[in-house]
Image (cartoon, rainbow, N blue to C red; front, side):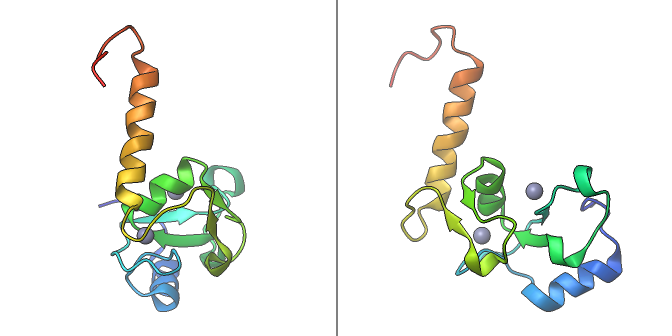
Length: 112
Ligand SMILES: [Zn+2]
Ligand SMILES: [Zn+2]
């Protein structure tokens, strides 16, 4: 699988720092993605200090713009929304649902 083609050397560095789990403070889930806190498309470089491994949920939250202090070290991160333990998945579901609703707002799915 391609992981943003981050060089192996840097991936090792990241694994050494974060282990194989999500880099979000307190999250015990396995990391699924390597997130570039400075957006690779902008900086055009892979630097281990700007890459954080994240689980699917936290990665979605970051890209949904719900993370405060993204440019800081992960221990300083904070979420814009209150999330109870293990409640993150349902919050993301809600975000995704809202997005989908926004995409097809043609009176479809008037149920809930
Ligand atoms: Zn990302
Ligand atoms: Zn996580």
